[in-house]
Length: 346
Image 1 (cartoon, helix red, strand yellow):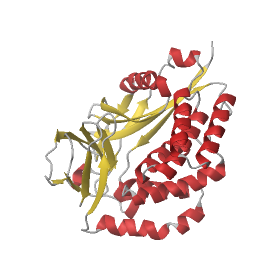
Image 2 (cartoon, rainbow, N blue to C red):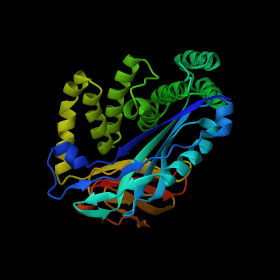
Image 3 (cartoon, rainbow, N blue to C red):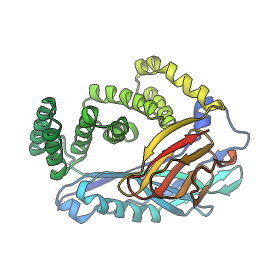
Image 4 (cartoon, one colour):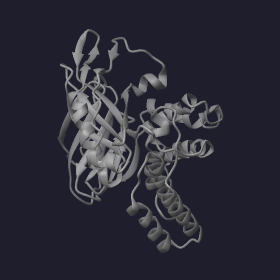
């Protein structure tokens, strides 16, 4: 039987204001902490096929340290994704947490956890079959024929990925296709997924170092272009964590503009679309928002904040203001698939 190893990475959601301003709140808030994390079982089908994946859950922890509202925010694994997600969720729900504390008072708190499923021997690269198909796709894409490029990409996707190297390269293929024939939003989505392990996991790289460095900077630019400003701040701060001082210096003016926008009364608007499951999400940059001009059904808002979880039916054109006491918030919108709408933050 193949031996497997599972890595747990815990990310507590920290205050964006604290990161940006360096100011310390008068009342000290401590995020939830996993005191006894549980490791998930490696899915049997995945182990038989030597398949690897990672799953990221966003969730809330109540005042007794129990997990509620777990939601998958990132996942790989291809056709076996649901198997990995199920095992990760079971482990998360069995994990014991120290609840978030506001001073000496237990409060609800948001957190995320990443489960990395790897074979113990660990692949040291993509398989020969995948590498050959990836190379063929790159050649087809260079010919500037959208129809044949899409067909080649579909072949690569339908084959599926067996390990985390292949997952990174598959999403780079999707990104490169989107550069030629897609939108800036699609480019951002696929590049973020391709870089997810490098940005948040242990120092293991599946893409060449020079590609990772360029891709991180490109992701920051795409987040600015798509007005995902809270995500852009985190990307900028990651440059220093990854010893990319050149990017820090080069992009510092853009970061300063983000600081100014964060503290100003200026509103900004972005255009968005729900995915095939009817979901859309974003880390809020400002405390107020309104949704309008939807061409389909949008039903519900869920807010996972540093210190509070709330959900409510969405009213289009209604202005919502989040109390400062909630802290920074991750917003999830639920509706039907492929709904276009405008999202304004103020």
